[in-house]
Length: 342
Image 1 (spheres, rainbow, N blue to C red):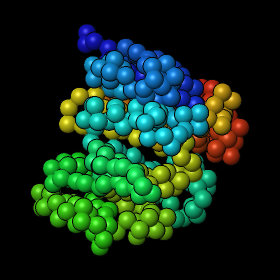
Image 2 (cartoon, rainbow, N blue to C red):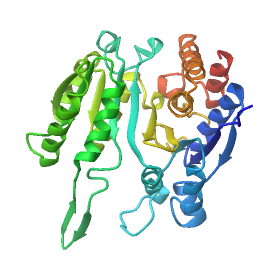
Image 3 (tube, rainbow, N blue to C red):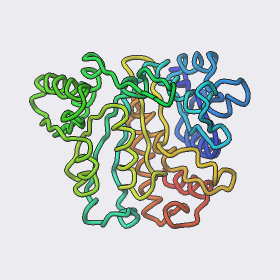
């Protein structure tokens, strides 16, 4: 008998522990997993003075997959550049695990087509994947502030662009839409040249370039046009949150962060929502579908992933609605509904 997969669970802050509880219940129903729980983000700052300890990073490196709920909250919000921030835990985890590709699927459930702020006929049939570069760009460039002047440096290498482009083309079915700002930024011009070179290795997939401002408009005007959106770090951060609203709520969107080797990181896109923490109103569905992504991309268990996604769709089709979707189902009730359809 093969050993149980080792999953490092990071509940984090705000509603994180509540939706992680839902994930743990789901995993208990799916199969045998060895789960370990660790502090990250604000919870780690409170306990250890840093958002990510070396011990937690080592535990994550030694696992088969990492499941993260949420980090952040107003109590740790500060403009002091020397003070620890919860988000540093997430950035450190991505860097420490070598996670360079963030995958965010956007596929509105049939049952939620009328929950989106866009008309049903505009989003029906949407099935796209945002592939975002995670370890380069302005979030990791040189920065500083002095004498009334501040700067953040955006930098990319050919190698960084090549590896994320290859990931995007490997996941595409028909088209890669590469998003940049090549009419203004030198990094975007390098991005476009490099992506075009990688595209020649994938003659069966169409490549189109789109400026980021146009991409933001096209996402809401004709989302069904897109297959895979390939973006640098900051553009992908913004566009994927915009795309989340196509599903009716950011509480519905899962994500996966993967690298060349080692465990992947799987997490819902929503934040820690401290305003509803402890009320039982958190939507656990993005967390549950993040478990499905972990099973598919992290552990190679496609059948189990499909079971979870089907159960979520069937629960929604039967009328399940949490407060963010216009209903009153609690976190516990939503979890029970999905488990009932497995």
